[in-house]
Image (tube, rainbow, N blue to C red; front, side, top):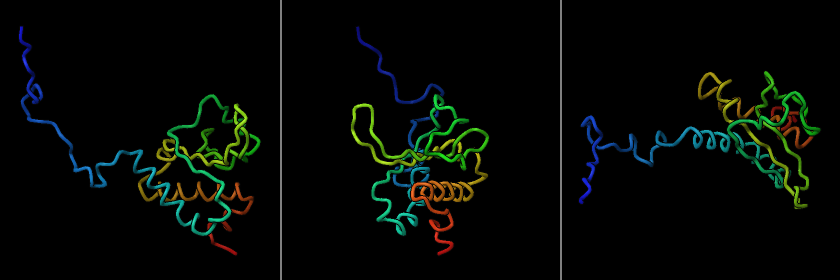
Length: 153
């Protein structure tokens, strides 16, 4: 018995489905990819100024904070400055040792969804991401955020 081969048209006859935008245009990037690029762009001036001090620091992006961690009880390395409405915008995880005894590097984890929810538009999101990164790097370096951002000294 031969199987009937299905045509590549949708059932309403509107034609082939394909990409809305070519893959090389910025509009074709996902929300996550755009946010990752925004974080890298916000980190660039900070890293240019503090490159030698940040060689042992990683920056990561996660969608949402881990709900198993009680946001009302920040870790011993957190000061709670960026906690708004009990949802952290970012976390600084200090260097340490993992469960297998392997050393880990210090890491800033930026949370995409809480930042996107708080921003009014793209420019506001870019400013908020920059501010969050400045505050987290300042906490890592044990400096004032204005010093890290280059506004003074």
